Image 1: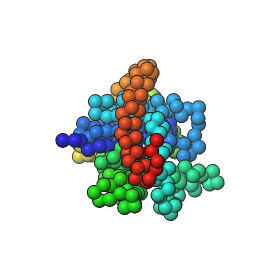
Image 2 (image 1 turned 90 degrees about the vertical axis):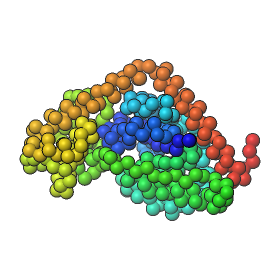
Image 3 (image 1 turned 60 degrees about the vertical axis):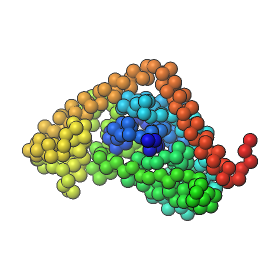
Length: 335
């Protein structure tokens, strides 16, 4: 039986943090044997906001190496760089000419980021969801792992499938496959260390708000020591008045691989002075194998280059077939 296909990716905008790992990549590792997986480094998305061209290529290699270091297995998964596949940009343009402008203007993430950027907001930021749709549809993805903040973008992708199939296809011969969301609830929203009500994010200007996967042990300990907490003794989950407490207990639960009930019993009488060193030790020990494997991969640039080259070939073979199908449906003269 043919396995269902998965498509997902992460932007190369700085180091990955625990939120990226626990909310996305760890889940990819856990389910990868059950699917045919395409995992890309979405560098085209990374330039929809101001970026540093001096570090983009390095950050792209870093993300690819971290995919492998976290446990993505090339036996089950293909790793590639988005910009290496020209079909992503080509299909995005074709979809642009099908997408109503008001669909994009209502995107919540665009509105939020546009407010922050003011007059510097780019067309690329507005068009981000169309490029994301192209990413997904090029690979005939059956399922797309998404968090709550990406659900609206996937809904736009699904709307584009309906619109394109209705205008250029038929029930017997659809142009695109309809992708389904794969909602990952376990650890899907790891919150900021400085604000338990805000998601841990690479865009937060404060490095103290997140633990990066490549942070050394002393930096991890410093960040956890300074994380926002409360004066209450005894640690509990699910108290709406203690979001930071819930977040730190959740991090400990996920990284120590214990049940919620077990962690609740262990920590119910603890103070922060006892818990924070315990959490630091758990984070450091959990990230040590990832950091060691990452250093090995970065010291073997030829191997990483070969992985991405092979990934490009596999991804191109699939993407070009889809692009040709769309071009035919839209009436282009093929070379």
